[in-house]
Amino acid sequence: MITVSDIAKTKIDQLKQESHLTADYMIRVSVVGGGCSGLTYNLDFDNEMKAGDQLFEDKGEKILCDMKSFLYLCGTELDFSDGLNGKGFSFINPNASRSCGCGESFAV
Image (cartoon, rainbow, N blue to C red; front, side, top):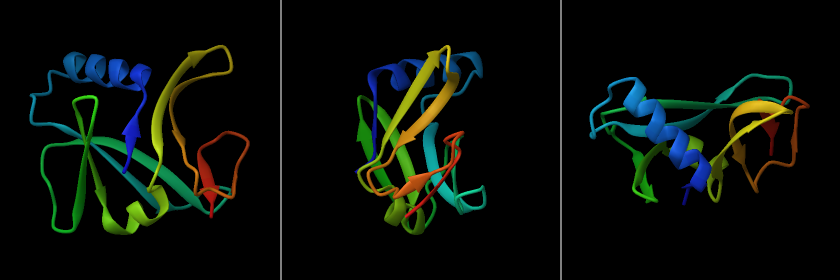
């Protein structure tokens, strides 16, 4: 399962409203090759479920993830920080064995 923190849910709702997205838009999380640690997180909005997608719901947010990415993201929580040390979404991934200093990429 992939979950969202309370603060991430608030920010997602705010972004959907600012972008005038309809209620059928979901969060799509995925993993792509790249970054200094080998794998990079990707986060976007999507209104279509594709073949092989996994669908999760947490705190009223629907989260889509392709099966390949889910193998890396199982148990991950999507969080958001707006503190002095950086602003943006972050992935709290129990499967990551290491991550880069900026938190943009990881390895398993």
